[in-house]
Every structure is written in C-alpha cells, then in structure tokens.
Length: 239
Image 1 (tube, rainbow, N blue to C red):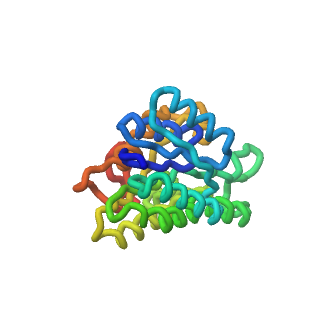
Image 2: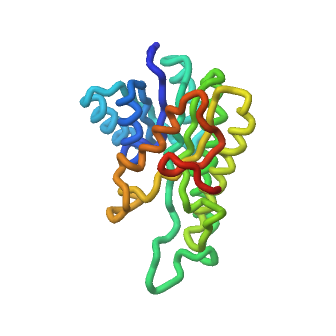
C-alpha cells in the first residue's frame, strides 16, 4: 500500500479534471484518475505518469452505484484509505443559445434534461461522498466543483437544468459539512470560473491551470482551514 496521501478526481481525463490531477500529483500526492471512458482515462493517466507523476487509473461512472462500489473496493484493497475527493465530473446538457428561438428558457426545458443533469452533477457526488468519506477515517478533504451559475444571490434565467444541479450541489456541500463538523473532514464548493475546456469553450477567460488552482487549494487545506464554504479565486463568495 502507498505511503503517499491519496487523492481521487472524477471526470478527470481532460480539461479541468486532468489539470487538477496534475497539480495534486505535483504536490507529492498519489492521484487516482477516474473517468467513464476507460480508453481516454488510461491515455490521460499514461500522459501524467510519463511526466513522472504518481497516478493510477480506475474506471468510474458516477451515476452507477455498482461502478462506485467497485471503486470503493479498489481503494480499500490498494490504498486502505482516501485523503481527498474532488467531485469534478459534470455535464451541461441544456440547449445552447439559438438566435431564432428562446431555446435556453426554463419554459422550454425538458424534464429528462433535468433528470440526467442531476444524476451526474448532484446525485453522483452524493453517492461518492456517502461511500468514500468513511474511508477518510475522520480526516480528509472533499471539493465539489460547482459554478457561479448555481448562486441563488445572482440567479438569472436560462440553462435551468445546469443551474439547478449546481445550486443543489452547493446544498449538498453545506449538509455534509454540517454533519462532519466534529471531524477533521472539510467539505467545500468551488466555482473555478469560466475555463477554456470543452464545456467552457475556447473564448473562456481562464486556462485550466488557473481554473484548477482554487480546487487544489481547497483539496490541500490545513487543519484550521474552512469547511462548508463556496470559493472562487481562493476567496469566499455568496451562495
């Protein structure tokens, strides 16, 4: 079993997740890179390993309880415990803006889009927290990758399924943090900003390196660090 601290990142074969893996591994952690696509995940893992980082791969579909159970058994057998969980996997399934119609309006949103989005962006992190936090033995870090689009204080119209899933994820953060307040486990949400990824697009403001910074900061907080907060650029923001 490894003597390094163990971090797990979901949805990590590209973009923000892959950069989060790289930055965590650069701090001397062993990182378990997970993704639904095993081919892409193994290729990303090899890319990091070839750069000298301590990283391994395990397939994971965050919407599948059996896939999560297999991951838990892998961690128990190979590492015994987990120190960091980064819930990064997410989808944005709302229609893109259309000049000829109000395609992004909640009035036109399909319930199936809500269901599928919530399964990945909200229910997945809940199941992973339920199964993986007990492996932290009372001292660990959980980072839920949220979005400013989920802030109730700045809520706007459009893209309703994605917004709702991230607002709900923020509530998940608060609930777990409250129930773990008497432990050494810290649970926080992060808005990485508008990042140049497949989801964010090429015109986004931030590089993946910049977007991952606050995620990694929260994942490696000292024992006197915050819990139950929402952060951007290493600063607290309103819910």
